[in-house]
Image (cartoon, rainbow, N blue to C red; front, side):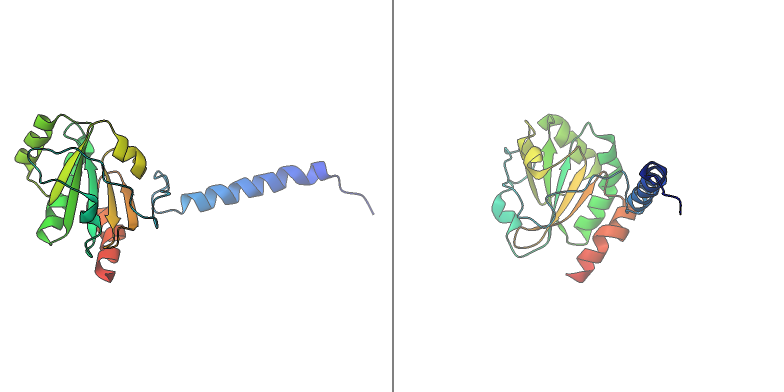
Length: 176
């Protein structure tokens, strides 16, 4: 009986392992989205400065017994414009949304909301990006669903458009 060298088995085994890894990686809902370490954890502290055009947003707003969305946005962000109609729709449905104006000029943020409408119940400015860093934000827009006890249930990186609303957010909202 001939002895099989490990060098003959290694290449096909490595190939099969990589193929399986790639296949399962492509089966994720959004293969471009990085997973969040924050889902399932307590929401980090709210560290915003006051914006003149939004009522102040605090930690207590996330621990009020209601589901709340925390949306990181900016006036200079084109995808933020794309998600804005969905945020307005959610506000019309009675969903409370807290807005965090990320690394933006307050006057530009006010003009953005004046032009497109204001979906936010409350908000604040994260001018230096510290709050976004603590929340694990990769870039705007990014939205977090927080339960009434302050625990993060879901993170949506990128614009919250109808597809994301129906596929990922709506099932959780309907289940609550």
